[in-house]
Length: 120
Image (cartoon, rainbow, N blue to C red; front, side):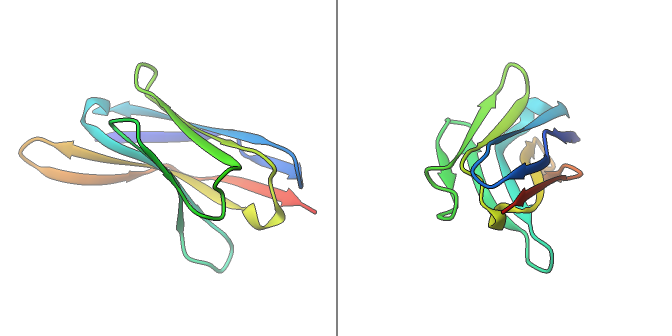
């Protein structure tokens, strides 16, 4: 089992920055991928950024050049630095982890979500 707890959401104005953090606990050594997703009101949840165990990252086109994901394995955290925020970035942001549990397969874990609101 893996537990994820996000922090760092809030209300900001367009152009400002926010940093989201997610702390993992439990079977953290089994985590293979960590990511941030978001879900705006009335829309489907979408991938924002992902970091693999080898450190490679990928971003949604809409956030490339503005957002940066980083993972600290020693602290069991994954962070999302969000710069030059836009009103369309407004959403609930969710931390995600994929874990491989030996003998049981892969499992998906989600945090409870943190609200990010960007005013124009």
